[in-house]
Length: 498
Image 1 (cartoon, rainbow, N blue to C red):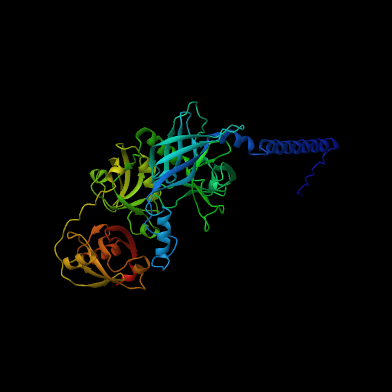
Image 2: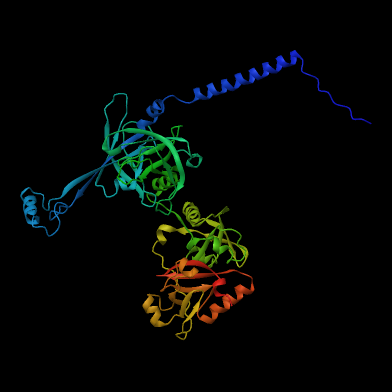
């Protein structure tokens, strides 16, 4: 039977007309949507700037500086002109006479009753703080004295208070976690002492870390200069999503790389400063380091380079809850831990005295510990507990994994500045072509654990290596101390093949 061809009827003229009408209608809708979208975007930022600018303030600080006894900074020390300039200063009364030094910064009002946020470095050491308001509408500026409610050097945030006769205009905080790279932002402040100024840009990056433990900076290309410190970074809704704190610049001026402390960090700090006059951060009581990719093979049960590995457990909340060295902290208070920075921030944001669940990976299995958090500020000077002493080993050396090792003796402990109760193996030399050298091990380091067990002798270390090979592992995790500071290093076992 021959197959029959299928014929497709041609559209009628009426159908063609209807299709063209629908296409025209859709094109009109698309054009209308574009017009409405363009109309929704303001042609100018002036209305927003006028709305929020009355809450932005200039901050002037004054400090008494002790007089200098010589011409420092004028001529080099030992110069033949040194005596001449000293006599000149003395004649003009500039010798040892105290003088007053001023500095400028920015800030913003967060409540109608006069609370003001700025940077700690803007007001640090000041004897007098004046807040200058710009009401706008041609009205004269007003200056009010401010007192310090509290400061937090860790996040460089300070909370001030002024007493005004009338309720002050203020700005709200926004959710910095909602800020996206590419969003428009406005920076306001007092750059280079030139008075109130507005600059605009975008969010260039998020979650930047500079040098602090609790850093969470928004990077922006909005112009930020000296004097902008402490000023607000606004989103297009007029909400503060950051406090302008630092710039990256080779010449001291803006090159489009500025950093604002994220508002979700600032709000927590401000709430504690307002309530207590100081910060009260949670404290877990461990020393930790990031889990590196080469540790994944060396730690049983670990499948990815996430979490924070415990390098030391001094007396404190974690030790009381049963946490151990080489535990990998996987989650804290019901939230996964990405790395050490993430854990530190989670713990710091937790309430002092709160009992939290901490999930750790130990021996290939997960365990849940209940830890009652202490207060970090009270534990800053905590000293790690000393290790359990072992028997004195014979002074011998052996080359293992690219390391020349020797059991610790009293003489070696003294040379390395170790505690007289410290046990382990001293690194006396490192093969510069070895993996150990590439990963930073050096003569003077002390290996205290291998494969999650303590090592006192060379024989014990060799047993740990043999056990790891029998288990099919390609690397061995070592706990290394340098100057008392512990860290983990995973070394491949191929360099010590039989």
